[in-house]
Image 1 (cartoon, rainbow, N blue to C red):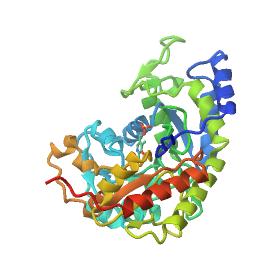
Image 2 (cartoon, helix red, strand yellow):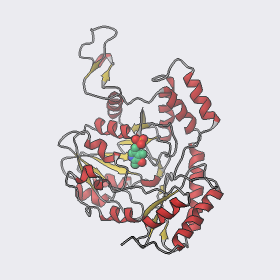
Image 3 (cartoon, rainbow, N blue to C red):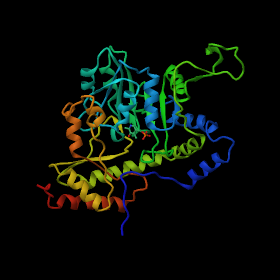
Image 4 (cartoon, rainbow, N blue to C red):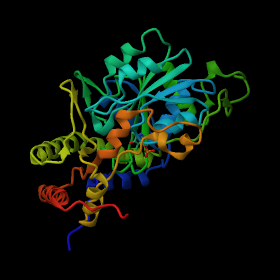
Length: 385
Ligand SMILES: *Cc1c(COP(=O)(O)O)cnc(C)c1O
């Protein structure tokens, strides 16, 4: 009996467990010293940007859009090749989502599509570092020339990646991270917002903490009393607890090792699959240092569904990332049409994520390659008439 290999999973050691236990035994369970320490550690990975931790990656997006001032009447440009939260968190603030197609090879937001989609109502352009490969931030910035829109990086896949020698976290006006267990590092649930703009950082910190203002020089009624705090703009409780920040700090110490093992597995997949007919391996730009979160292959000849089913039956937890966001019924019901983003939609029809995580052993990976090879050799299963 061979074990099931998921497409992604966490790597938790005794050190992580000890860090969590120590935080549990401390005086602080929620906002305590581990929060500020984790934010400082993350800042070091994000090129010195200010960081606000939050309780998950979706909350990070919601906080970032709120900090950017997104509201009804605003447009937010998003690529369809992402997890739905990149778009739905802005829709939740009342924005109109404008989907702009992705580039061939990297399947990140296409700067030319952004130019075409930008209007005077565009508030934020949200790029996604799909699979851990950074979007083309300089070209996206150039595409926004003459617009007041902010650039957001959804870096849920790409903490630790680099773009032209600069770290993810320092490339956009706002960057969001997710620490869900399948991502490049975990806090169970968790996320963060990074920004180099102190005003955006303050707005992000306040939104994550119910909108509470405590700074005396900003209070409307500063003489109310020592207990006094005020809400000027509505926020939510999106705080990440001390216990989970302790786990995050411990994980972050191994992020470099995690990324090195992911890169090694990616190189091994690239080599093993280079001459396999019927599939294409992921592309990359020479200016990118990806932090590979996914290994997204393309299965040609209309055989993705069949290969998915065969590999699942063989105990390989392949995944499809992602259904084009505008295909979700919530967007379809608003009138978004299939066919509007042909590059992303053609990619979706072929996409398959192979298992990729630091604990994946070489022998496990060989099993994945063998299962893929036999799935492709299999007589194509014809759909029932
Ligand atoms: C995982 C993910 C999110 C959401 O993060 P959660 O922590 O699961 O809420 C957002 N965007 C992308 C691209 C993701 O992969």
